[in-house]
Length: 139
Image (cartoon, rainbow, N blue to C red; front, side, top):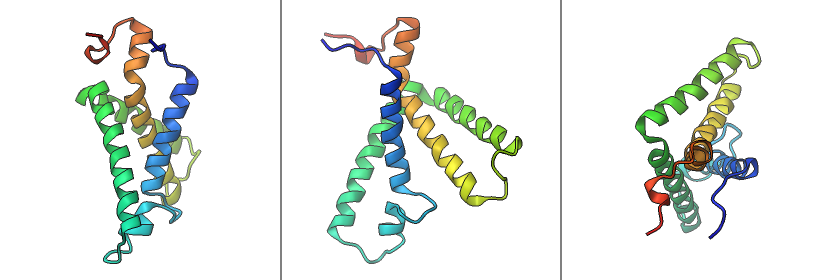
């Protein structure tokens, strides 16, 4: 059986895939699925449909794993953590509050953080507490 422990590299890889998913779906630069396919409606073709389906599958995987791992209350806590972190960054003046582009990037990175925490949480909890989820128990 393969090792079930998680490393910082594993969390980083999960964050990278979350970032590809989030920023591939939308970003303020205009190079995203939203700008390429959704904003161009009613013009639509099979490639746009295929890429949309791949993104939908990615979102489904990440959101289901996040909801199952964190639960509703944990999701609220994760969103609150990253939301207050963004507030702190803006309050300290590291990012101008009147910059829509900067705030958009912060929100997108926070979404990546919530998804990464959700998809990594079961592994982290097992490592910290030694407890397994019911999904982890072998038959």
